[in-house]
Image (tube, rainbow, N blue to C red; front, side, top):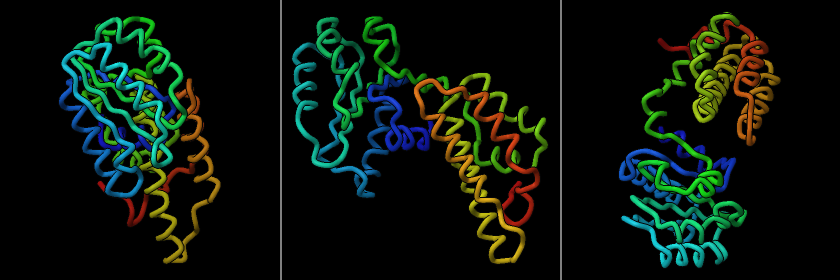
Length: 243
């Protein structure tokens, strides 16, 4: 799970309760680092970030979490970050309703080594992110965006196949972000050089694709294949492209 994935999750939440599966210390610290950055950037109030590391989360801890969640955040959004090695069944049942229907201004992020410590009813309330597996399948979306723009429709589909096959929504969104960034650079260069400008409709297509990817059950295949068909070939040529 890259820093871009974490930032996107915090800035564009498609779900209010996330379970991040992988080495707890690693991902807990990655999220804490990004939260500190967002506080320094003014996107979050420090009072609205609550993080705790539990060896075993018990019923008293669950009550404390519920008490914090029931208070109003200082800013527009609160982030509650929890890392745990184990969680008591009584605590899970206590938090079940909260994970299912948290306050609209709260995001829960739970970091755990494995899904097996949770009751099936609790797991069903989470958006589960297999962070360790995502790291193994890391895609250089910046380089992919450049190669995509220069490629034929068929080659574009081949490039996107790993993302489509594994249904990697966060990777797909990062790809669109990088694609948009490259195209904005090309648009700026074309206006300075007097060359033909990039059709603004392309940016609308990317915006729409990103919006659909953030929906609850997006068809990644349909969204990316549509984008591959509507963006003209050869837009990566010139100064903004790189090897």
